[in-house]
Image (cartoon, rainbow, N blue to C red):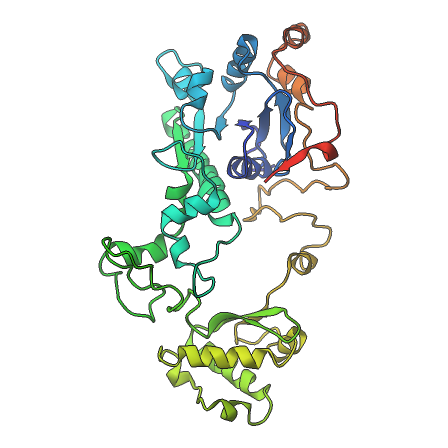
Length: 412
């Protein structure tokens, strides 16, 4: 039995972070019901194990049935800007107030910014968190890692964590609470380790061999000292190199003992006289001589381009401690997955109460048609067949799209 079996979650349809929070709960057994808008033309791909209903919450009867569902739920996931749920008549006070409908409800709110309802996306949250300024890229600007850090890490995953913490606390208090997650703050929390260097002594150590050097003063208009430090692309022994075939390898031999193994194998794999022609003596003793880093990195770049990635994989074969591995593309990485795995498996693994099995994801399986479970869910929540017909007639349940999932545009 999955760990969250029996928990009921109402997830109002949104974009990436909120659906991912719901996906985490659904993978571990929660009954996640996504509330879609009438006439929606989107489809959410982060939807496995979920059910979908269409309810027009702006319709008086639709609002009433929404309240009835939430009154029986353990968790509500609100993906909207600040104030939207209150204007709809579904704010926290409706459920937690003096005459609240469900004081045990964990009311999870997921927003972009802590104190603003401005529009934004992952790249903007990452910018304001202070993290983007530290990331590698090229010499002129940092690069952003898709929308993984703010949307899914600082947003969806930390929202799911907050929900779980509130559910645990409810066992002792008997009460739910509001869980507020914003992606700027979530990204900062996720990045506590590097950000400590800019925030407090003794972490503000002005040394390139530290993972991140202290940031400029608040009054300074200079950018951070990016790509000069241990983990931000400055160190030649913690970097990515292009091979002769255009593919890449990652080098991560931070510790001297690993760097020694790397150098031994690396040097032996190069043509005779190659290092001598570069006029640079490389040794374990000079690993942290930052004045040599640019020249060493340049030499490594030229060396790795001599041969294709397959060659370097054989040089640094599995089982060695050189900390050199191929940079796999998504298709290559998928081939290393467990037999029959069709999507990234839920993680971590729980031995006694494992996550649900993945769906087949064949053709339209694994996709969720908006409203396809409306009647089923309402019946599960105790609404009679006659009442469902009445709600349908009045237009409170909208009109589900009359096209296949393949005709709907996916949410990103």
